[in-house]
Amino acid sequence: MNSKRLILAIVAVFVGVWVTDFLIHGVWLKSTYAETMSLWRPEAEMQGHMGWLMLGQFIIAATFVVLYAKGFAGMACLRCACLYGLFMGLFSQATTLITYAVQPFPASLAVKWFVAGVVQGVLMGVIVFFVYKPKPEESKPKE
Image (cartoon, rainbow, N blue to C red):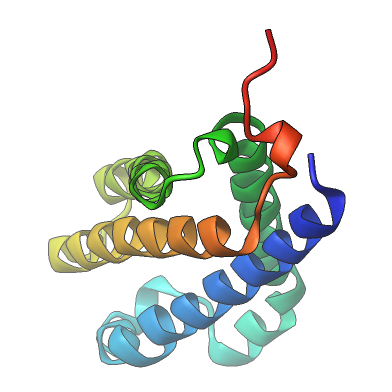
């Protein structure tokens, strides 16, 4: 594994997750959250939990990148990176369907979360493809 590229890719994907989460939740879904305020923590309380949110986003980024580096980077193909991101997005968004089944929030919100999460996964696949580059000897499978 290319350690420098791995760390750079983790940072890039972390920033990508943070920015896209802000656009999804802080901009696009802001009015939806305002309409369903009784389901969420008050804003001040959410700010107090920001460290947990950032930790979760970092774990997502690190896991996403390490899995890519260990199992998919050797293919060095943008199409493969997009497929990887698609499947990681689907994997992570399965919990949205489960959450919708057990929590009383609008179906439209579950659909928006699901679609946004899958698109976000593909975008993170593109980011990790362009940032993480395996060393030439790592791009060939070892026998």
